[in-house]
Image 1: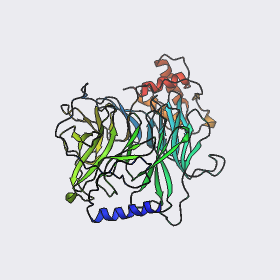
Image 2 (image 1 turned 45 degrees about the vertical axis):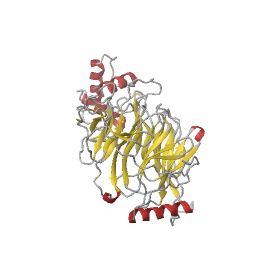
Image 3 (image 1 turned 90 degrees about the vertical axis):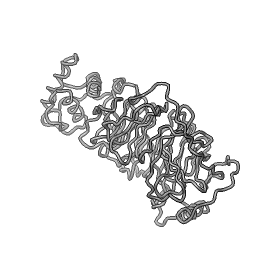
Image 4 (image 1 turned 120 degrees about the vertical axis):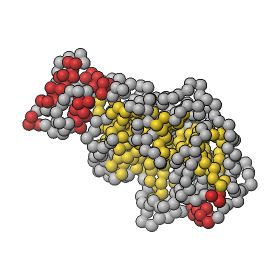
Length: 478
């Protein structure tokens, strides 16, 4: 381990001071990586000047709606790219979001982790420093990071780290604790801090990122893949972008962009064994700058790449990539002819119809079809944390466990964020609940009565499960 970290420090110095020679290609190692660079460094192949073939179904619009954070709430961008619909109604800003295949949303607001669907707006974890929630594809579990959990969380002192909760309820479980932070850094025995990244598409594996403690200005870390039966696979990483392939068999890794980094190029990690192999790596003449790579359903890797001559590269190089696809042989084929800006946010369509991108030079998200005959679409969205909206209906759920929301007695009124949520939805639909203050008083009760009558529900002034699902459906309709 000590030799490994020393070798990376030496590599950083060499990168900053000189151009490395191209190594003699040797067969790929099949051993689990120990942190060294791959033994084989394929030279970047010349970019083939042919354009990608048009997709079978031309897509001028986005292929599906998209959830994103904008104006401190979860919004849904329509496929035409020109319409935004508000999904959450929180009084405090929504910071992060994740969505399951069944439509259930989880997000963080203030210090609470919230789940939203037809079962209601419910608190999964509250009064904690929560970040990076990631809901499983089946919508049954959510992982998240907790920093300095309060003692009452598990009934004992709980360490910082990655936790998991069942959405149906129950106590959270510690999945991966942080290592104790050393007083003096020892890079021969690194201490790790863990961050959830994403579930595999089938939900069988969970990807974490391990960052050295204390954090330093030089990239360095590991990917941690927790598989079935909690089997753990670790592989070297360098503060890079690790993205699941559409079939979940591998991670594609972008080895650096136009910033300080220890290596550059495009790599792939076998998630079963943790072995890494290069697809496009630095040569003696070319530095490949890569962003947002993902292997799609057609078997190719799609990414944003620029091949930069070594003599022209510097850490503030003006990155101007093209949208490309890359074969397993390292051949790079441009998809679109445009030289683009630096992509900050990217969401590929799994069928490789295009990508929704936010570039550094432009706030609005752009839809880039992979069919070069189709126009680029500038959307009205300028938010962050984008995710494709599932086809499943957010509001269709069993009513087991739904907590009816009823008027509060005048002498026992207190703020309830679930009340503030329904007040916001009622107001959006034209039923005046009075001030959106989280207090269920007479004006809100009158608005509920009017909503129930207008939608054909039995008369009443409470929101039961059927009324909630109707309110959720109508308030989030396009």
